[in-house]
Length: 231
Length: 231
Image (cartoon, rainbow over all chains, first blue to last red; front, side):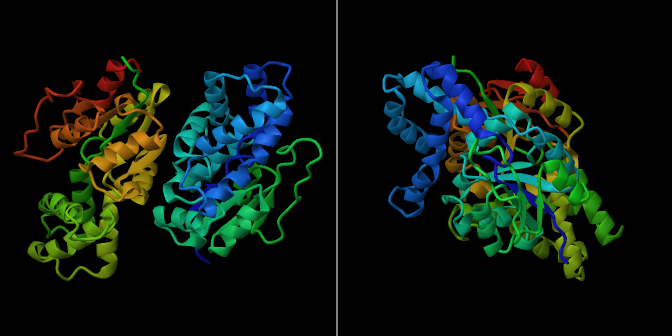
């Protein structure tokens, strides 16, 4: 069996808690009159459709910061914040750069880094991922981003590109994510897969799968993943 | 004056000692009958001409590992090592992945990282730079490489691309290098520049400039650079 050399991580929801972080910044910047968690959910809800416009070729390559800004501008009126000024909107987009890690993330990544190459493989743009790593102390060996490939996950170019840049065969790389579709797409390109159960990602009423039967392993934290991989 | 946010580093010669590391591996893999330091110098001598073939469009994009391998194959007969086998040649190319940092590099980078974004900006391919960082404990926030831009330094696409991926204006980025031509090319694209005097890079008989009069600062170590930048 070919040895695993690297792990690449989905970030939003898998490594960091986007919902609390975005809601906190929305409350701070827009005031207590705004439904901050509702805005966070609606903003995240616009994520896939906005990337799909790029993936289908309706938009040329557009970075996630710009997609986030366009979605925000569309959403603010429905949340009673149509009068938010330019500086507030720009600052709110940067909320996605300052998301906090889940409590197990830094400890788990630090253990995994001692034995494996660890990198993000996120739809966030490079500067977002660099800022986030500095904010939360995420110890990436390097940042890999959809931006480097001009394709958003789950396009195959992202998984192929990660293995290529790391100089590895797909089966030497594990994709780690809290989302079944990301893992299925990675498996289709020959990567190994690890599912992380993140029950708090989406807030009340969401109930992500306990495990991914197709994945090589399913865990509840990155520390558990480190233990499973001997790190 | 616009604030500096990031430093990007040339690697070979500026952060790591290529000559000692390549010579050590050549001696180990080819035996004591080979002039290991001579081979290291000749191999490095083939570096610019081989990249220039890519830069002039005579070759399609070719990563540095592959260029190193082609140069090695050309050089080995002159060093009495024409009979080196495939495994030895492949292993010797990886010597460039395992170069040791100069004694001040890790301490200087660690200090700089606390205040600034720090990234490589090297002609080495991504996997080479990731391996080197793990080998030597180089604490990059992310690895930036010519490979991401499909252009070798000193092509302008590399300097422009680094600022773009970091989401910064060119004047918010400092190029750090021990080579005047790299810094001149970075300045031409609007980056700030810091020269590092590395008298031992090229071995006996080489005598690099003490300072770069055009640079914003000239230093003798990355720790001195950290002090200069308040880190």
